[in-house]
Amino acid sequence: MLFHLGGLYSALYFLAMLATITYKSQVFSYPHNCLVLDLALLLLMGVLEAARLYLGTKGNLTEAEVPLAASLAFTAGSGLLSVHFLLRQTVVLWMDSVLSATLLVLHGLEAGLQVVVIADFIR
Image 1 (cartoon, helix red, strand yellow):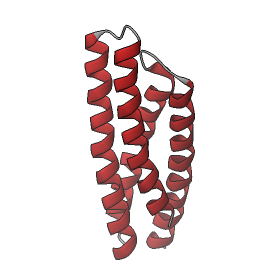
Image 2 (image 1 turned 135 degrees about the vertical axis):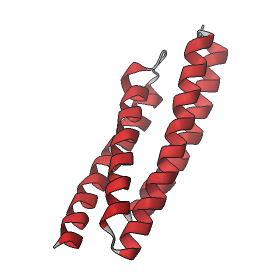
Image 3 (image 1 turned 180 degrees about the vertical axis):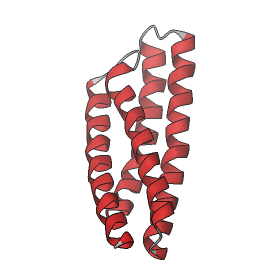
Image 4 (image 1 turned 90 degrees about the vertical axis):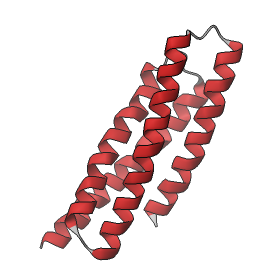
C-alpha cells in the first residue's frame, strides 16, 4: 500500500515541480543553464521513480531480494535528488520545500519497509 501511495505522490510531485519550475522561469530571473539542469534532474528523478516503483512492486510480488535491493538503491538516488530540490535548487520556494520534505519522509518510510522485507525474504 505504501508503494501505491508513494507512487501517486511521486507522480503529483513530478507534475507540481514541473509547474513550479515553469513558474519560476517566467517570474524570476532564472539562468538558462540552471533551468536546463533542474529540468534534466527532474526528468532523471521521474525515470528513477518509475524504475523504483516497478522493481519494488515486482520484488514484493515475487518475494525476490534482488529487485527489492535495486529498488532500495533507486530510493536512495531519488532521495538525493529530493534533497537537491529541497535545498540546492537555484530558486527554492516554500512549496518546493514542503513537497520535497514530504517526498523525503515517504522515501524514508519506504526504505525502512524495504529493508525489513528484504531481511524477511532472506530469512
